[in-house]
Length: 539
Image (tube, rainbow, N blue to C red):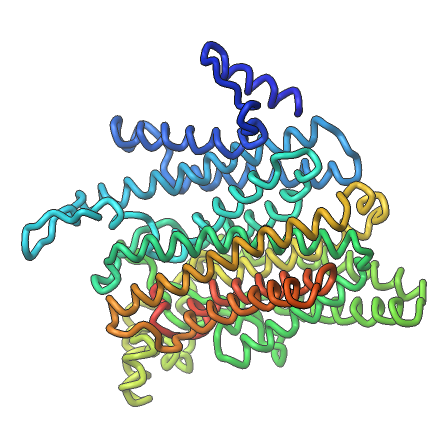
């Protein structure tokens, strides 16, 4: 046990006569203490008012800062093992979890205060709801779910980090948590009005199980990456896989007509402008080109394709010169990604009104966005175009660029940057990194345990979702995109458990299952809201 843990344990047990060591709980203090602190924080918010504590947006930003520091400490500990770095990483993760969970709880109280807790009483019958407090649990949009997803993953990370030889988990899982919270920040923490049909006590149960299950799945993904690295998978192979996944994801999204930020035929990179209203932002469905960004994105594609070709020649032909060229292209792509992302943020911040850049040829897209997919299907193309033209004429001076109108696209760019950065880091003194990790058997066992929990959670998710759907929509299953995606993700984990238990699979094959399962979860988590229309797009 570390000296810091011993000191905290002694301080807590002074005068109580109870030892955490007696019950084996001392290793779990970094996960337990934030829960107590968050309870105290929300108690202060309830009794002393909103001014007594920071708002949820501030707390989430503080959590991000803590997670970044923790991830940096734990990553550095791979190459330069140091007890202090490990303790800093552990307790900074714990502090980040405190801010993360507290922010979510503060949002819960703020949601109730916003409506003056009117759901305590049925507005038609005057009867008291026995579940009224549940009604305000912040699970109404993608921001709420992202914050819960993040603290679910962090809580799972802290529980697994109860021993010194398992604290490596946060080095991979925390950067993923940061990416999720970055997207949440881009989305914005404004409240939305929940449709009455969804106001059920099954909502917090169903979505709460989803956020915890997703969090555990994220940790299993991180463990799978660590396993493959320990098992000798070359960073160059990871670079090839990342390139293939990046290109495949872009092509799929582009063909499906989702967000088309980059048009390779014109080297144009475009973002959605929005109209700012007092109640929030109205997404116009239009696109505005950002000068220079498309050229950098085109260069990035060439660099990554060139990198993948060089690495493939190294892997299959053992060509060392191709390995060196591939790593030069890898580092160059990292620099281009950084410059491109910085260019986007700079232009969004300094662009000002952009309505004059939206041409009349985009009237149809604007009208379709305003109507929504269901209503637009009932209108003629001429009517949709007329609605868009009228809106454009009335609001042209108010069109502005805003990061919050493109959260998934911006988060995807940052994610690609982080993935590339990790591949660069993994290629630095790789053998030293591998030697600092626990045995393959231990990592494989941790993957098995986390996937077992995620599998059970996703099963409960499907069951509670069916009950909620039957209550709200009159049917338990309709092959809605999110329902189908959740089922496929669950089946992937079922495949992992079946092949392991019935056929004795383990090692790399099982690790690949863990990777695939989490990628399916991410597609279900984001793809439905931003690519595939359906009953769950409200989220």
